[in-house]
Amino acid sequence: PFDELMHLTSLRTIAFEYNGEAEGTLPDNISDLSELEILSLSNNLITGLIPESMATMTSLQRIMLDDNEFTGQITPLINLPNLELVYLEDNFFEGKIDDSYFPSALNLKHLDLSDNVFSGTVPPHFFGESNLEVLDLHGNLYIGGNLPQFSVEQSNLKFLALHINKMTGDIPPSIGNLRGLRHLDLSDNELTGELTEAMGDLRQLEYLFLGRNPFDEAPIPNFIRDLTNLVDLSLKRSNRVNVIPDWIGTDLKNLRLLDLDGNKLNGQIPETLASLKKIVFLLLNRNDITGEVPKSFVNLPLEVLVLDNTEISGDLNFLCEAREQNPLDYMVADCNINNPEVNCTEGTCCRVCCLDGDGCNDINWLANHDPIWENNYQRSSYSFDDELKWVPTSNGSSGEGN
Image (cartoon, rainbow, N blue to C red):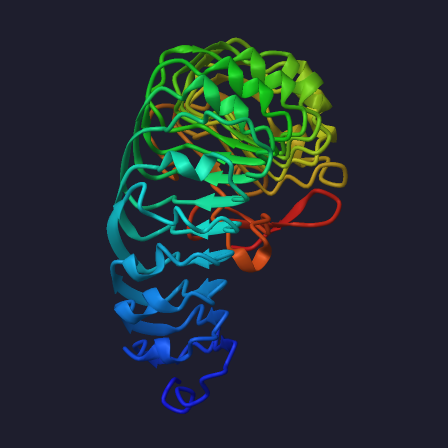
């Protein structure tokens, strides 16, 4: 789309996003558009490298090249001084992220390099005296090393997504300095040690995903009860032991999703969970939980309830017999006809009936939010695999989209 534009040297905006069939490469002489401030080419089929000449395009403020097929490094962009929004996600960019990435962009508010092939570490300068509000580096696989020290107390950063990488070591107590965080996803890394109590200072959090990390065995930490704004909480496969604490039901009243799958939790399901009047997705599977599901669950707006590979017993059909109060749509339990641990009619109540320990429910049930800038990084749906998707409605429940 550039051949007819290159003579328009006073052009300030190029917007060819969501054309779908726009292809080709960025021209080497794109820097002739020296006054260009906005370059928006999202969701096309553009290939090739970032031209070296772009390093001179100091008027650029917004770059949207996401969801294309770019390759190579982004070196021409990393020292542009006036950048505010940079969206490069869902390409094939590579390079070693370090302190040389965007150190001069003092007005940078959004930086999204997710779902590429970057390596390196997370630079500390992203968390200093910065205007950065969104930092998304998830899904690069090769970004590793320890989390940086968050040495400056600040409230600008709202969204931090580092999941599906190779981060190692402990979560530093200095993470408590990121007082403005609403979204924190550190899942699917190689983080170890204890969960620092300093995370209890992140009182604005609405989304906390820490699962699928080999943390030290420990109970669900008490600091979480202070995070009363939480809507989505996942501690999946994070080596949690002992019982599910009563305070989850009494203190975390805004929960829509609670994922405790794949731990070593025992004891019974607390009656207090029936106080979670906004809960839609509850995953307690692959634990050592015993007893029956509280009868008071019939009044919850549950749509997904996953209970397989537990020691839960009793009758679950009561949850489906009261669908006017309870819109339960997808339930999995150990109700296989050959050796049922619970009574739940397959098809009309339980969507899947497992035989405890046979691995019939092999869905990973990953509920991570994969954000896009077009939605202002807000969650618009809940997806658990390629087939299971729910779209929230205004009243807090949702509808299955599979």
